Image 1 (cartoon, helix red, strand yellow):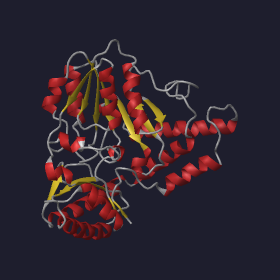
Image 2 (cartoon, helix red, strand yellow; image 1 turned 180 degrees about the vertical axis):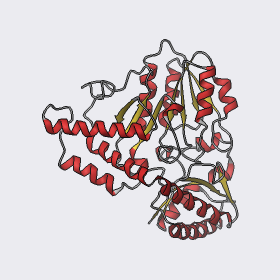
Image 3 (cartoon, helix red, strand yellow; image 1 turned 120 degrees about the vertical axis):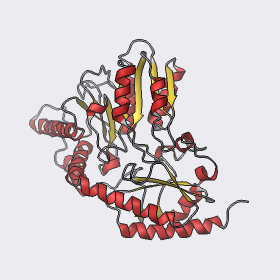
Image 4 (tube, one colour; image 1 turned 90 degrees about the vertical axis):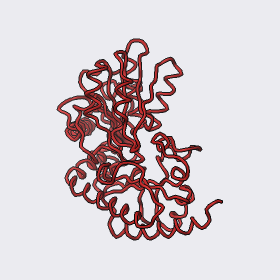
Length: 380
């Protein structure tokens, strides 16, 4: 099997799996309990919290552990708005993950003014249009760091600067799910930042929300008062410590990992461009995130291509895993102006540091053969 859907999820690092196992079978105590083994577990979690803060490039601030990006994104929106007076303007981009985009649309039905800003042909937020949306009564802005379908990287410093100038009371939340550890970031570029562990070789079911100092934040679920009262529920210590181990492993190999993903991305792109009837969706190969490549195979239906490749041992996707069960057109690519057979034939390839160039060459041959075969049966 050749796995090229690492934006959907990643194989857990051995270091992360081993750490999670340790905290399931040895240090399995509830960190909210009072006896010393539980206090030791709590200490481990807080040490991991400090390390995560450092990995985010944050000198200070709150790291709140969650079940993953969907909870982090929902909590960022609801927890921030709960501390705002009235119902001001909310701005999101047209390509946001459903956990942001659909949450914003639901708030529109509740009386909030929700503005959706467009993107350019690569999937980056249109900064001119974005500036035109900012007003003094803007309360909240949520923008993804990396487009999860094309790998386009948004200009967070420019976005931050525009908000400070035109909407100084607005909070900027960044969905960093496809960006964290893949492209540089520091928390000076935003007020809030979401991550999900299974996108960088940590276990599934764990993530975090960074909340900067000075952000008025009401938190998420209530109950036992864990996470300083901002997110109740027994902490997922195995997941947290597994995520901590994954981050440590990634940071120790950061440059080598990025280089390997870029090499794989470039090789697949070069191989596919030799075939003809293939178009790139998104930024140039060297301008986007290192791990995402979106190509359209003209004359081929993406869903048919996906299953044909699966039968031959190559796993890819037609878009976000969280949208794969929804019928209809691809909202993200559609927002970029991609239509017709280019939209219909889009395939997302996403890489990990474990992918090899030999795998990419083998996959390239299979993809080219499959596309040529399917084109013979193109509907007239």
